[in-house]
Length: 563
Image (cartoon, rainbow, N blue to C red; front, side, top):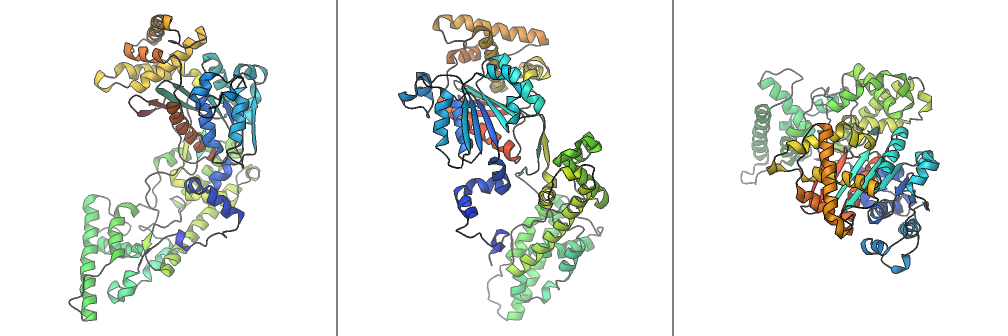
């Protein structure tokens, strides 16, 4: 008997429906973030500052999955260097034209679902000067290779005040980084890699207990019924026996290795007895060993399904105890209103809402669907209770939260996350910088953290560019003097913070050797990683980096830091 899965009992969409055509086109990504994530993408408007090789690659990876619109800010003219390192500008026909215009035209051809693609032939500085509120209407802003430190800091301030997410990306030679700035980002569907099943076997709710108790003794079952019994029933029956045999409390679950092995031994002994009983009934002593696959499944599931009903993850505890939950000012925020409803639900029921999903298991369709309906009905009931609680909150009528929204929230209450980063503007003047320098300073030579060293050097390259209006090392006759300047910047920085920074001269020489040039392969890699983070933020699914990602192309090593 093949395992029955949840998808196997759902009716497929009509192959001729528009939804089916769309599902076919975006099949791979819909498997990752579903219809709700796709709808979020299709309502997003992204702003890109600088359509160089890095920026173009990022935007390409957003247009293809189906963002609604993009706007490029770029007043640069396409040069031979652009044609050499940007695969989108392979022909010399582009040289001399506005880079934003050419890129917009090329990207618009990549997806017919794109509603709008336009560009602004202005510099970032002029946009910030003339209309700082310009960026408040975008879902997210991507800033690529902003070499002027003052401009980057100004953009950081503007977006921080309006809570518009900002992703800063830079690529120089073999080195690149991504820096996320976001005041508060709430995540309901975080898609954790490893999860425990929410089955409530320690304290089955009424309808589940009735179903589990309805099963007769396994010894009285036919061979067919026995092999079709869901492993959930098997675990429940032998969990009761384990409690009796080892004098455990009625709600106890096996917690450690020893206790889990005790339960496994009980199930294995029962399997041997059942095989003997069935052989005796059939009268065939020479028959092969019976394949009790569902019993084997129950043994494997012991490590994943035994979670106490009142288990609440630490991240969720911190959310329900957050000061925002006590404030009426957050009642106009859907996420925090949901958290308030969740807190009241937990206070009343001493547990989270039931998730309502079942793992795959060997069973016949009728038994699986019956069990599935029991869990779904209870999950729906819990979600309705949370929904009713939220409706009683002040300003609840302004939220437009639907029952489906609450059901999705309740299904994911174990995985809720809130991400908030530091702002970029304060990074080179505050605690984050001291953390960087101290981390570098205490690293021993055997475990050199070159990725963090390069990140600091790239930020100092911005300072160099802001003062000299060029990259260090881009003039052959001034390489040594440029190295000395960067070395002095680093020394001044260390002195200001009262610490010693351990950055070898060969790293400074390496960053100057690049002369600010970009390699398309490195830019493409950084761009792919950056686009992934953008999609996480736009869909409010999966957990984005917090907050700095550095790539060293020489060693092919990536590292993430919280600065």
